[in-house]
Image (cartoon, rainbow, N blue to C red):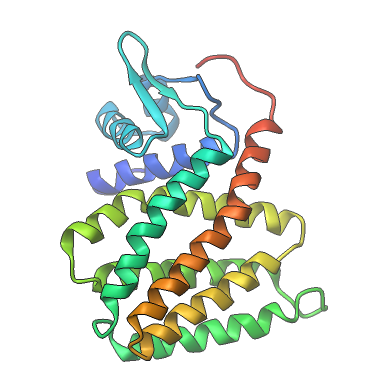
Length: 242
């Protein structure tokens, strides 16, 4: 992580620990020792400490007296509750973003989503490139959610969405990886359909429909993420306390 800004170092650490938790590399109850993590990530202790505080703020670690940072147990119910928070925040952001997002951005994104939907229909055929489909679907997902947050017209709402962004993208990335390992791209195709419904409502200036489409999209995601993450956490051999 050399030659990057302090803020980016912290962000990279947060992202790496989140992926580690949801992939089962860090287990519930494990201590996250600052010096060991600093050596693992090749950074000073300062961004590690800041990352652990950020992770505590979104409910992934506990900061305990005399123990430091300890990974919380993540359950399917935890995932559902976190996604409920996301639903409230991003549905409101979608409603507020109507009329604020540049139409050229929406037109471009709609075209990309239509391309991905068509591409997803070819899965299982000799010409289908699963890795490219996953990467492009991930990029379209990030692009849409970022556009909505930036255009919602509320700095505080955008900041709150941003506070949870790495967490939700870790959920997504772990889920996408599991599906890719199974050569099962159905959920990603469904997400592209859901995203297109949101983009269409935004482009038509229908704030109520945009908010509902976002809510449905997040509700559908919970059904997949919750079980996938619990499966990942229970399928690994637990290492000894760090």
